[in-house]
Length: 393
Image 1 (tube, rainbow, N blue to C red):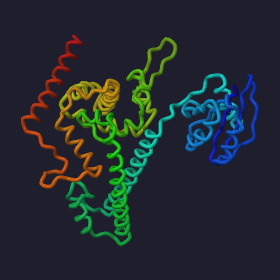
Image 2 (tube, one colour):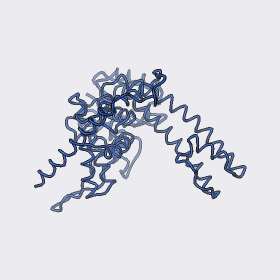
Image 3 (tube, rainbow, N blue to C red):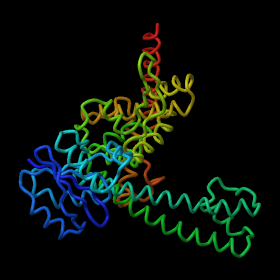
Image 4 (cartoon, rainbow, N blue to C red):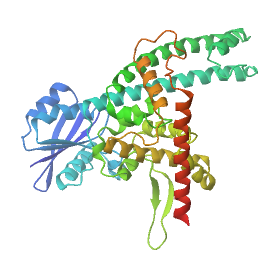
Protein backbone atom coordinates (compact mmCIF):
# COMPACT_ATOMS: atom_id res chain seq x y z
CA UNK A 1 0.00 0.00 0.00
CA UNK A 2 1.35 3.40 -0.98
CA UNK A 3 0.87 6.44 1.26
CA UNK A 4 0.44 9.73 -0.57
CA UNK A 5 0.81 13.11 1.11
CA UNK A 6 -0.80 16.23 -0.33
CA UNK A 7 0.32 19.69 0.78
CA UNK A 8 -2.74 21.64 -0.31
CA UNK A 9 -2.70 25.26 -1.45
CA UNK A 10 -5.29 27.41 -3.17
CA UNK A 11 -3.92 26.84 -6.67
CA UNK A 12 -2.03 23.54 -6.47
CA UNK A 13 -1.23 20.45 -4.41
CA UNK A 14 2.34 19.34 -3.75
CA UNK A 15 2.47 15.53 -3.88
CA UNK A 16 4.82 13.03 -2.20
CA UNK A 17 4.57 9.21 -2.26
CA UNK A 18 5.81 6.98 0.58
CA UNK A 19 6.42 3.34 -0.41
CA UNK A 20 8.71 0.65 1.05
CA UNK A 21 10.32 3.14 3.44
CA UNK A 22 11.23 5.63 0.70
CA UNK A 23 9.67 8.92 -0.31
CA UNK A 24 9.45 10.03 -3.92
CA UNK A 25 8.18 13.24 -5.43
CA UNK A 26 5.25 13.52 -7.80
CA UNK A 27 4.59 16.50 -10.10
CA UNK A 28 2.34 19.19 -8.70
CA UNK A 29 -1.37 18.85 -9.33
CA UNK A 30 -3.49 21.96 -10.00
CA UNK A 31 -6.20 22.43 -7.38
CA UNK A 32 -8.98 22.20 -9.97
CA UNK A 33 -11.70 19.57 -10.30
CA UNK A 34 -10.64 18.17 -13.68
CA UNK A 35 -6.97 17.94 -12.72
CA UNK A 36 -7.71 16.39 -9.33
CA UNK A 37 -10.05 13.78 -10.83
CA UNK A 38 -7.39 12.89 -13.43
CA UNK A 39 -4.80 12.57 -10.65
CA UNK A 40 -7.15 10.39 -8.56
CA UNK A 41 -7.74 8.06 -11.52
CA UNK A 42 -3.99 7.59 -11.88
CA UNK A 43 -3.74 6.23 -8.33
CA UNK A 44 -4.08 2.60 -7.33
CA UNK A 45 -7.18 1.28 -5.52
CA UNK A 46 -5.01 0.23 -2.57
CA UNK A 47 -3.45 3.69 -2.06
CA UNK A 48 -4.18 5.90 0.94
CA UNK A 49 -4.07 9.69 0.73
CA UNK A 50 -3.47 12.18 3.54
CA UNK A 51 -3.81 15.95 3.57
CA UNK A 52 -4.07 18.73 6.14
CA UNK A 53 -7.38 20.30 7.09
CA UNK A 54 -7.68 23.51 5.05
CA UNK A 55 -10.51 25.44 3.47
CA UNK A 56 -10.64 23.29 0.32
CA UNK A 57 -9.35 20.01 1.82
CA UNK A 58 -12.80 18.45 2.18
CA UNK A 59 -13.72 19.12 -1.46
CA UNK A 60 -10.43 17.60 -2.61
CA UNK A 61 -10.95 14.57 -0.37
CA UNK A 62 -14.43 13.97 -1.83
CA UNK A 63 -12.99 13.95 -5.37
CA UNK A 64 -10.24 11.46 -4.53
CA UNK A 65 -12.23 9.11 -2.22
CA UNK A 66 -13.90 6.96 -4.92
CA UNK A 67 -10.54 6.00 -6.48
CA UNK A 68 -8.42 4.95 -3.47
CA UNK A 69 -8.66 2.78 -0.35
CA UNK A 70 -9.11 5.75 1.99
CA UNK A 71 -8.57 9.48 2.31
CA UNK A 72 -7.51 10.92 5.67
CA UNK A 73 -7.56 14.58 6.71
CA UNK A 74 -5.07 15.58 9.40
CA UNK A 75 -5.67 17.79 12.40
CA UNK A 76 -3.79 20.99 11.52
CA UNK A 77 -3.38 21.86 15.21
CA UNK A 78 -1.41 18.64 15.75
CA UNK A 79 0.69 18.91 12.60
CA UNK A 80 1.58 22.56 13.21
CA UNK A 81 5.06 21.36 14.18
CA UNK A 82 5.72 21.11 10.45
CA UNK A 83 5.62 24.90 10.27
CA UNK A 84 8.17 25.18 13.09
CA UNK A 85 10.83 23.21 11.24
CA UNK A 86 14.01 25.05 10.25
CA UNK A 87 13.63 24.02 6.62
CA UNK A 88 10.08 24.39 5.39
CA UNK A 89 9.00 23.99 1.79
CA UNK A 90 5.89 22.63 0.16
CA UNK A 91 7.83 19.56 -0.94
CA UNK A 92 9.10 18.86 2.59
CA UNK A 93 5.60 19.30 4.02
CA UNK A 94 4.18 16.79 1.54
CA UNK A 95 6.98 14.34 2.36
CA UNK A 96 6.29 14.67 6.08
CA UNK A 97 2.56 14.06 5.59
CA UNK A 98 3.28 10.98 3.46
CA UNK A 99 5.70 9.59 6.06
CA UNK A 100 3.27 10.19 8.95
CA UNK A 101 0.51 8.44 7.04
CA UNK A 102 2.73 5.52 6.01
CA UNK A 103 4.06 4.92 9.53
CA UNK A 104 0.69 5.18 11.28
CA UNK A 105 1.30 8.50 13.07
CA UNK A 106 -1.14 10.58 11.02
CA UNK A 107 -3.39 12.68 13.35
CA UNK A 108 -6.73 11.97 11.69
CA UNK A 109 -9.81 14.15 12.20
CA UNK A 110 -13.42 13.02 12.04
CA UNK A 111 -15.20 13.82 8.78
CA UNK A 112 -18.75 14.91 9.52
CA UNK A 113 -21.69 13.74 7.47
CA UNK A 114 -23.36 16.20 5.13
CA UNK A 115 -26.24 17.15 7.52
CA UNK A 116 -23.71 18.03 10.22
CA UNK A 117 -21.54 19.99 7.78
CA UNK A 118 -24.64 21.87 6.61
CA UNK A 119 -25.53 22.74 10.22
CA UNK A 120 -21.98 23.91 10.86
CA UNK A 121 -22.03 26.21 7.84
CA UNK A 122 -25.35 27.71 8.94
CA UNK A 123 -24.18 28.32 12.51
CA UNK A 124 -20.92 29.79 11.24
CA UNK A 125 -22.81 32.14 8.93
CA UNK A 126 -25.11 33.17 11.76
CA UNK A 127 -22.17 33.94 14.03
CA UNK A 128 -20.66 36.09 11.28
CA UNK A 129 -23.90 38.03 10.83
CA UNK A 130 -24.11 38.63 14.58
CA UNK A 131 -20.51 39.90 14.66
CA UNK A 132 -21.21 42.29 11.79
CA UNK A 133 -24.35 43.55 13.51
CA UNK A 134 -22.45 44.11 16.75
CA UNK A 135 -19.75 46.04 14.89
CA UNK A 136 -22.34 48.36 13.34
CA UNK A 137 -23.99 49.00 16.70
CA UNK A 138 -20.60 49.85 18.17
CA UNK A 139 -20.05 52.39 15.38
CA UNK A 140 -23.29 54.16 16.28
CA UNK A 141 -22.37 54.23 19.97
CA UNK A 142 -18.94 55.59 19.02
CA UNK A 143 -20.56 58.44 17.07
CA UNK A 144 -22.61 59.42 20.13
CA UNK A 145 -19.57 59.16 22.39
CA UNK A 146 -17.26 61.35 20.35
CA UNK A 147 -19.97 63.98 19.95
CA UNK A 148 -20.58 64.17 23.72
CA UNK A 149 -24.17 62.95 23.42
CA UNK A 150 -25.80 61.87 26.66
CA UNK A 151 -26.85 58.29 27.22
CA UNK A 152 -30.09 57.31 25.48
CA UNK A 153 -33.23 57.18 27.63
CA UNK A 154 -33.95 53.60 26.46
CA UNK A 155 -32.05 50.53 27.60
CA UNK A 156 -31.87 49.38 23.96
CA UNK A 157 -30.72 52.11 21.62
CA UNK A 158 -31.86 50.07 18.62
CA UNK A 159 -35.35 49.35 19.89
CA UNK A 160 -38.42 51.40 18.94
CA UNK A 161 -37.97 53.98 21.70
CA UNK A 162 -34.22 54.20 21.23
CA UNK A 163 -34.41 54.73 17.46
CA UNK A 164 -37.07 57.40 17.92
CA UNK A 165 -34.71 59.23 20.31
CA UNK A 166 -31.73 58.74 17.98
CA UNK A 167 -33.60 60.43 15.12
CA UNK A 168 -33.93 63.61 17.24
CA UNK A 169 -30.23 63.85 18.19
CA UNK A 170 -28.36 66.74 16.56
CA UNK A 171 -25.21 65.52 14.82
CA UNK A 172 -22.79 66.92 12.23
CA UNK A 173 -23.74 66.06 8.67
CA UNK A 174 -21.01 63.45 8.19
CA UNK A 175 -21.82 61.78 11.50
CA UNK A 176 -25.52 61.66 10.64
CA UNK A 177 -24.56 59.98 7.34
CA UNK A 178 -22.58 57.39 9.30
CA UNK A 179 -25.50 56.68 11.62
CA UNK A 180 -27.96 56.42 8.73
CA UNK A 181 -25.67 54.04 6.86
CA UNK A 182 -25.26 51.84 9.93
CA UNK A 183 -29.01 51.72 10.51
CA UNK A 184 -29.65 50.68 6.89
CA UNK A 185 -27.12 47.89 7.20
CA UNK A 186 -28.61 46.83 10.54
CA UNK A 187 -32.04 46.47 8.96
CA UNK A 188 -30.56 44.33 6.20
CA UNK A 189 -28.64 42.13 8.65
CA UNK A 190 -31.77 41.79 10.80
CA UNK A 191 -33.71 40.47 7.80
CA UNK A 192 -30.91 38.02 6.98
CA UNK A 193 -30.79 36.78 10.56
CA UNK A 194 -34.54 36.24 10.62
CA UNK A 195 -34.37 34.19 7.41
CA UNK A 196 -31.47 32.13 8.70
CA UNK A 197 -33.10 31.59 12.10
CA UNK A 198 -36.19 30.33 10.30
CA UNK A 199 -34.14 27.70 8.46
CA UNK A 200 -32.33 26.69 11.66
CA UNK A 201 -35.66 26.42 13.51
CA UNK A 202 -37.20 24.28 10.75
CA UNK A 203 -34.25 21.91 10.93
CA UNK A 204 -34.33 21.82 14.75
CA UNK A 205 -37.96 20.69 14.82
CA UNK A 206 -36.91 17.55 12.95
CA UNK A 207 -34.10 16.63 15.36
CA UNK A 208 -34.96 14.72 18.50
CA UNK A 209 -31.54 15.48 20.00
CA UNK A 210 -32.21 19.23 20.03
CA UNK A 211 -35.59 18.61 21.65
CA UNK A 212 -33.87 16.71 24.46
CA UNK A 213 -31.37 19.51 25.10
CA UNK A 214 -34.14 22.11 25.24
CA UNK A 215 -35.56 20.42 28.34
CA UNK A 216 -32.68 21.95 30.34
CA UNK A 217 -33.86 25.34 31.74
CA UNK A 218 -31.72 28.14 30.31
CA UNK A 219 -30.76 26.27 27.11
CA UNK A 220 -32.22 27.85 23.99
CA UNK A 221 -32.35 26.91 20.32
CA UNK A 222 -29.03 28.53 19.37
CA UNK A 223 -27.14 26.75 22.17
CA UNK A 224 -28.63 23.37 21.29
CA UNK A 225 -28.12 23.83 17.55
CA UNK A 226 -24.53 25.06 17.95
CA UNK A 227 -23.72 22.14 20.24
CA UNK A 228 -25.14 19.50 17.89
CA UNK A 229 -23.47 21.11 14.87
CA UNK A 230 -20.08 20.97 16.59
CA UNK A 231 -20.47 17.47 18.05
CA UNK A 232 -22.45 15.64 15.39
CA UNK A 233 -22.76 11.99 16.37
CA UNK A 234 -22.54 11.78 20.17
CA UNK A 235 -21.56 8.09 19.97
CA UNK A 236 -18.11 9.22 18.80
CA UNK A 237 -17.31 10.04 22.43
CA UNK A 238 -16.97 7.05 24.73
CA UNK A 239 -16.85 9.20 27.87
CA UNK A 240 -18.04 12.73 28.76
CA UNK A 241 -14.41 13.68 29.43
CA UNK A 242 -13.63 13.12 25.75
CA UNK A 243 -16.48 15.46 24.80
CA UNK A 244 -15.29 18.13 27.25
CA UNK A 245 -11.79 17.92 25.78
CA UNK A 246 -13.18 18.09 22.22
CA UNK A 247 -15.02 21.32 23.09
CA UNK A 248 -11.91 22.85 24.70
CA UNK A 249 -13.48 23.14 28.16
CA UNK A 250 -10.81 20.99 29.84
CA UNK A 251 -8.02 22.73 31.84
CA UNK A 252 -4.48 22.77 30.53
CA UNK A 253 -1.94 20.81 32.61
CA UNK A 254 1.82 21.36 33.00
CA UNK A 255 3.94 18.80 34.85
CA UNK A 256 7.59 17.76 34.66
CA UNK A 257 9.83 15.64 36.85
CA UNK A 258 8.89 15.51 40.52
CA UNK A 259 7.07 18.84 40.50
CA UNK A 260 3.30 18.71 41.05
CA UNK A 261 0.95 19.23 38.14
CA UNK A 262 -0.15 22.81 37.51
CA UNK A 263 -3.61 23.39 36.05
CA UNK A 264 -4.20 26.50 33.98
CA UNK A 265 -7.03 27.97 31.95
CA UNK A 266 -9.18 25.90 29.60
CA UNK A 267 -7.52 24.63 26.41
CA UNK A 268 -10.01 26.36 24.06
CA UNK A 269 -9.63 23.66 21.44
CA UNK A 270 -12.44 22.68 19.10
CA UNK A 271 -15.47 24.73 18.14
CA UNK A 272 -15.35 28.27 19.52
CA UNK A 273 -18.99 28.78 18.57
CA UNK A 274 -20.23 25.81 20.61
CA UNK A 275 -18.03 26.80 23.54
CA UNK A 276 -19.37 30.36 23.43
CA UNK A 277 -22.97 29.12 23.30
CA UNK A 278 -22.42 26.85 26.31
CA UNK A 279 -20.83 29.66 28.32
CA UNK A 280 -23.66 32.06 27.45
CA UNK A 281 -26.23 29.48 28.53
CA UNK A 282 -24.24 28.83 31.69
CA UNK A 283 -24.94 32.39 32.88
CA UNK A 284 -28.69 31.73 32.56
CA UNK A 285 -28.59 28.18 33.92
CA UNK A 286 -26.61 29.28 36.98
CA UNK A 287 -29.38 31.73 37.91
CA UNK A 288 -32.26 29.27 37.69
CA UNK A 289 -33.26 27.05 40.66
CA UNK A 290 -31.77 23.58 40.47
CA UNK A 291 -28.61 21.56 41.13
CA UNK A 292 -26.58 23.60 38.64
CA UNK A 293 -27.45 26.77 40.56
CA UNK A 294 -26.07 25.26 43.76
CA UNK A 295 -22.99 24.03 41.89
CA UNK A 296 -22.36 27.49 40.46
CA UNK A 297 -22.67 29.14 43.87
CA UNK A 298 -20.21 26.67 45.38
CA UNK A 299 -17.59 27.36 42.70
CA UNK A 300 -18.28 31.13 42.73
CA UNK A 301 -17.55 31.32 46.46
CA UNK A 302 -14.08 29.81 45.96
CA UNK A 303 -12.99 30.90 42.48
CA UNK A 304 -15.16 33.82 41.36
CA UNK A 305 -18.03 34.30 38.90
CA UNK A 306 -16.10 33.79 35.66
CA UNK A 307 -14.54 30.49 36.71
CA UNK A 308 -17.91 29.34 38.02
CA UNK A 309 -19.56 30.10 34.67
CA UNK A 310 -16.99 28.09 32.73
CA UNK A 311 -17.39 25.24 35.24
CA UNK A 312 -21.16 25.27 34.66
CA UNK A 313 -20.54 25.21 30.88
CA UNK A 314 -18.41 22.11 31.38
CA UNK A 315 -21.17 20.57 33.51
CA UNK A 316 -23.63 21.30 30.72
CA UNK A 317 -21.44 19.45 28.22
CA UNK A 318 -21.28 16.43 30.57
CA UNK A 319 -25.03 16.63 31.14
CA UNK A 320 -25.70 16.78 27.38
CA UNK A 321 -23.53 13.69 26.85
CA UNK A 322 -25.56 11.67 29.35
CA UNK A 323 -28.90 12.91 28.00
CA UNK A 324 -28.04 12.15 24.37
CA UNK A 325 -26.32 8.85 25.10
CA UNK A 326 -29.24 7.59 27.21
CA UNK A 327 -31.87 9.37 25.08
CA UNK A 328 -33.41 10.92 28.19
CA UNK A 329 -34.81 14.35 29.01
CA UNK A 330 -33.39 16.46 31.82
CA UNK A 331 -34.59 14.97 35.11
CA UNK A 332 -35.25 18.37 36.70
CA UNK A 333 -36.72 20.08 33.67
CA UNK A 334 -39.77 22.33 33.72
CA UNK A 335 -42.30 21.09 31.12
CA UNK A 336 -44.14 24.41 30.85
CA UNK A 337 -40.92 26.27 30.00
CA UNK A 338 -39.92 23.57 27.50
CA UNK A 339 -43.31 23.84 25.82
CA UNK A 340 -42.85 27.61 25.46
CA UNK A 341 -39.41 27.09 23.89
CA UNK A 342 -40.83 24.65 21.36
CA UNK A 343 -43.70 27.01 20.56
CA UNK A 344 -41.28 29.90 19.94
CA UNK A 345 -39.24 27.65 17.65
CA UNK A 346 -42.40 26.74 15.73
CA UNK A 347 -43.24 30.42 15.30
CA UNK A 348 -39.68 31.18 14.16
CA UNK A 349 -39.94 28.31 11.68
CA UNK A 350 -43.01 29.94 10.14
CA UNK A 351 -45.96 28.36 11.97
CA UNK A 352 -49.05 30.58 12.07
CA UNK A 353 -49.64 32.45 15.30
CA UNK A 354 -52.89 32.06 17.20
CA UNK A 355 -54.83 35.31 17.40
CA UNK A 356 -55.91 36.41 20.82
CA UNK A 357 -53.03 34.67 22.58
CA UNK A 358 -50.86 37.03 24.58
CA UNK A 359 -47.14 36.98 23.87
CA UNK A 360 -47.25 34.85 20.74
CA UNK A 361 -45.00 32.09 22.05
CA UNK A 362 -46.66 31.97 25.46
CA UNK A 363 -48.02 28.53 26.28
CA UNK A 364 -50.74 28.29 28.87
CA UNK A 365 -49.80 26.75 32.21
CA UNK A 366 -51.61 27.35 35.45
CA UNK A 367 -49.92 29.21 38.27
CA UNK A 368 -50.12 26.05 40.36
CA UNK A 369 -48.30 24.06 37.68
CA UNK A 370 -45.50 26.60 37.36
CA UNK A 371 -45.13 26.82 41.12
CA UNK A 372 -45.05 23.04 41.41
CA UNK A 373 -42.32 22.78 38.76
CA UNK A 374 -40.27 25.44 40.50
CA UNK A 375 -40.63 23.66 43.83
CA UNK A 376 -39.30 20.45 42.29
CA UNK A 377 -36.25 22.35 41.05
CA UNK A 378 -35.74 23.91 44.50
CA UNK A 379 -35.99 20.49 46.17
CA UNK A 380 -33.41 19.13 43.71
CA UNK A 381 -31.10 22.02 44.55
CA UNK A 382 -31.50 21.36 48.27
CA UNK A 383 -30.78 17.65 47.79
CA UNK A 384 -27.61 18.52 45.87
CA UNK A 385 -26.41 20.83 48.65
CA UNK A 386 -27.01 18.10 51.23
CA UNK A 387 -25.18 15.56 49.09
CA UNK A 388 -22.12 17.82 48.79
CA UNK A 389 -22.19 18.60 52.51
CA UNK A 390 -22.34 14.90 53.46
CA UNK A 391 -19.59 14.02 51.03
CA UNK A 392 -17.27 16.60 52.57
CA UNK A 393 -17.99 15.54 56.15
